[in-house]
Length: 146
Image 1 (cartoon, helix red, strand yellow):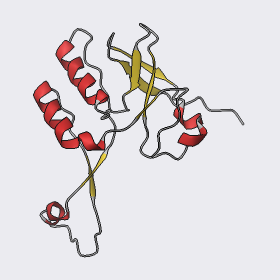
Image 2 (cartoon, helix red, strand yellow; image 1 turned 60 degrees about the vertical axis):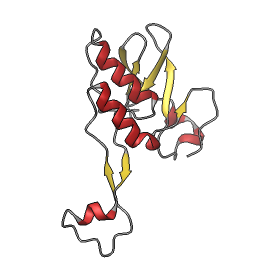
Image 3 (cartoon, one colour; image 1 turned 180 degrees about the vertical axis):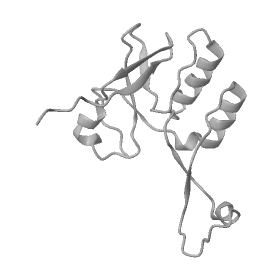
Image 4 (tube, one colour; image 1 turned 135 degrees about the vertical axis):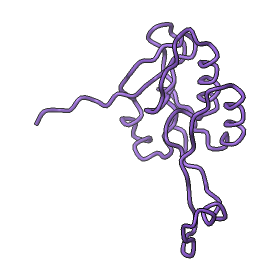
């Protein structure tokens, strides 16, 4: 049976504003196979040697010359909020307002988003969801505890 190619993940270097796809190391790390939530993997950038961060599959890179947009990306990623599906608790009172029956509901979550595009929106986003930030992990370090 042929071996399948490894699934590639998006990494972004915030210093040189380069995006690359790499095979993530986390799934092979024994302590990380069942970790949830997934930590943000930090690896050396292939272009400049700075830090490149796993940014999630929903990331769409702004143009390299757009420093304001890259500053927004940097704020979100460094706050542990990459561009992936992150679940936030949803108060049951908010759920009841939608008309969905909550009689047997213990808890509910919602996917956070949409992603901010301005620095003011990003700062408010980090203030609101910063507690949901994912931990960081560098190859060679001990795996973060879930």
